[in-house]
Amino acid sequence: MLKAIIVALSMSFSVASAPGSIASRGFEQLDGFDSIVTNQINKVLGTDRLPAGMGLPVEPGIYAVITQDRLTIFDKAVAGVEGGQRFAGADMVAPESEVGCPLSVFDGFYLMWSRVVDEARISALDIPTRVLIAADASLPGKLFVQTAYAAMETRPLATPNLYMLVNGGRAGIRSRPFFLLPPKGLLLPSGQRPLALRVTMKGGDRFSVSAASPKFGRVVEAGSSQELLNILQDVKKRNPGKETLIIDASEGGTVGDLFKVITLAQEEFSRVVFALGQDVIIG
Image (cartoon, rainbow, N blue to C red; front, side, top):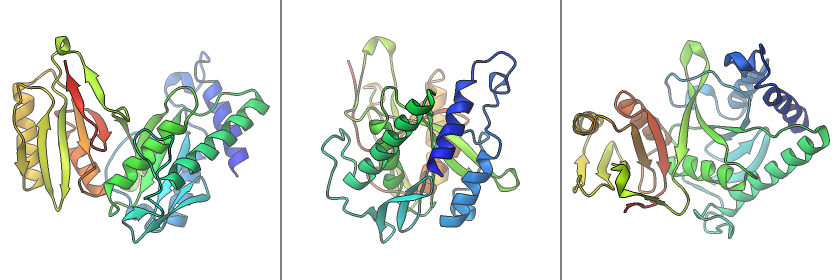
């Protein structure tokens, strides 16, 4: 199954810039790919277990699914999940991972990318650039973000474009783009006057809001989603040109909470960056 999908994906990506092609019109959609993803999610998880919300059409890419007991990439199980709380063997960290990904997750993506590269080399085609991740909404958000980092750190050459898969109801499976903070954190020049606003999930509908900018100068606690929304709206009024929000999953919260913050913030902060406690330093 992997070989057939990789060849089809690579062919889809290879025509992305062809004049007049479907891809060049913005629909880089491999016929039937969304059905393959939906069938796989239903097989191992159930689309009703995904966070519910709207997003973009699902386009071809590598896809992974995290359930209460395992992580699968395509249709292959690569890592176990213990009690719906942590990856099996999570204490064994991949030495090559700068962010400290569990060895099983890191190796699963490393082997997958290696196979993708081999298939692409044989077929003289490009390797896919997208990674689509679906996860049970009740799982810790940290598992989702660890999976994304493993996919990013193991891809050869350029980093992939990352998407969270959500249940769009009648619209079917949809995707929401996100980014990751660099594994070792980020240094921003003060001349750009960055804000680097961060929402740290605490679990139980509790959040803290902070920012790297010294002008922000405080940590604001939110005891509900409505309080968080009020804080974000106030920050936006004071910083109208800022569009980026960092969502930190290192201290708690679920996959559902990750998406809740995205949807709460989407009118004020359209660019979403996930993190696992990395620092953003200005200056």
